[in-house]
Image (cartoon, rainbow, N blue to C red; front, side):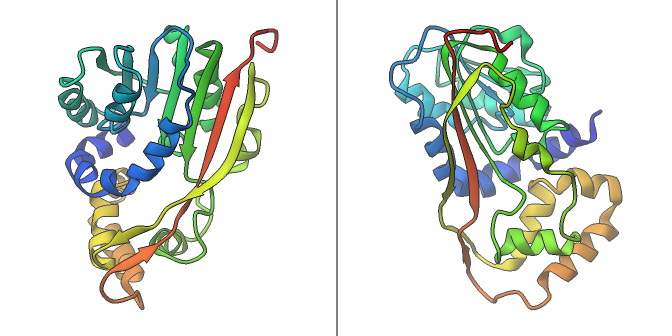
Length: 256
């Protein structure tokens, strides 16, 4: 089994309980950015996780086919539970990096999935390629630096700063048949009951779960110890910044 998918399988319940409510403002921003008048076709949500986008998309676009795609069986299970309330929605377990089979989408929406892709640049290109002319792509992701101080910044420092090549951020949606209509930083307040609760959620129910499975519990305990050194006591409030790209597929597809 793919280690990342296995990590998210194990993280699914905790992610739904802890992170989904905290990420809700960014999900709303990605959905609200779509124009009310979309072309025909389904709305696709790659890396849908437990599918928090669905309730907002279903309310804004009643009757529209909405499809979530995720590699993690655990996340797909939670997403399907949510989709039962929406007759026009369905969830597919599959690889969100290659969506060639979904050509003709009215929109593609992804929140906090892109930075987890093995090749984010290729994934974004694939997502753009399945849009029909005048279709829309709304992507929200965590950039290399989300904050100067706060729990995300501290995790990054504990892990040694820059942990992967992020030059792909400068090339997103280049050489694709899209026009970027909006490229902005969006920030909202996020609150954690304590530093302890944050790091426990991050390592068991967040993006570090796959690495914890690979490197073992000793690694997790070492990261936890270093993270908690000199952290604020009690409730911890911060303002992480995400990048939002809103792009429209051109009527002319010559760029393909």
